[in-house]
Length: 222
Image 1 (cartoon, rainbow, N blue to C red):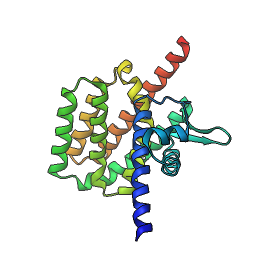
Image 2: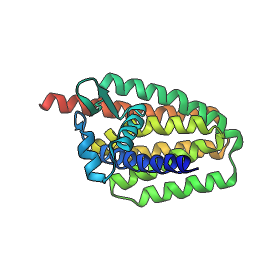
Image 3: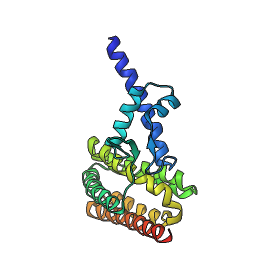
């Protein structure tokens, strides 16, 4: 029993460390290429190296860091090619989630989507808007009942979202995204699977192309 309790306690600690590091990566406080020193992280959180090592392994599985031999853990940086690949995977998986969700859409589903749209239209802070955006997309896929698929989608979205958190302001994507979200919800309201999938694919494709253009503009100004 004591061994089990220690395992549960350690797991809780490593999850807390992983969440803190994950948040710092999303907010750009730990940009791509940043080296993560286990001893420094352990000292900062007042824990041993064991939960830190477990936290880093978890973040590596999510694609947020790389563990490089003889160098240690480094925050990963996505190239334009990798970003495109992630979005192509997202489009495939999220389209599947929409197809499986539409037959299970209820009045409560539509009400929740409408509530989130209303909140997003009132928000001016891009970072707050992105938090609501994540809730909105989760609400689209939950009716599918496919928990593993939804978790996988969320992991992929979080990996790409850190770039949106940096670029969403300069991209000026929010007004267009609001219109794209509205099209998806209207298709959900009609239980129109093909229209919903098409609207979602256009939404993700437009976001990707905006990010890639911004990447190119940043490189050209350097």
